[in-house]
Image (cartoon, rainbow, N blue to C red; front, side):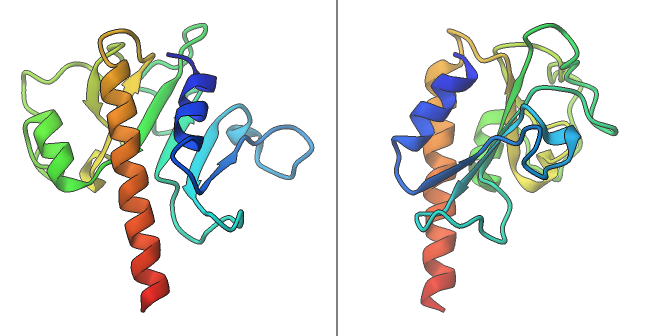
Length: 155
């Protein structure tokens, strides 16, 4: 499963704004090549976090996935506490257990190495083992983002 497949899947869900920062667009160089996915049916970047991202390189304070390996990327998905617990086997704010996989393992659903405590999971280089799960996670995150927006607009 590649980055373009992820984007195609998410945009098919409707109301998605895809940001792909790059040279000349005013974005910081650290974001170039990454992808930020928002629920924004009006096409305006909301003042909220994206519901999913794809990162293509290590960042200061976030090197544990070893994204410096050629062609490696990580899809990050905000799935909420319940889904996180079901996938990871512990609550988002609970410490990682001894049996949890290392954060650089590929094609495996993992607690996000930085934002796990906020209910985010990730997959480094999603492949045949996790493709269906990643699609489901993205649908869940999209649904949650849509519901949050609807609540805000209804308030």
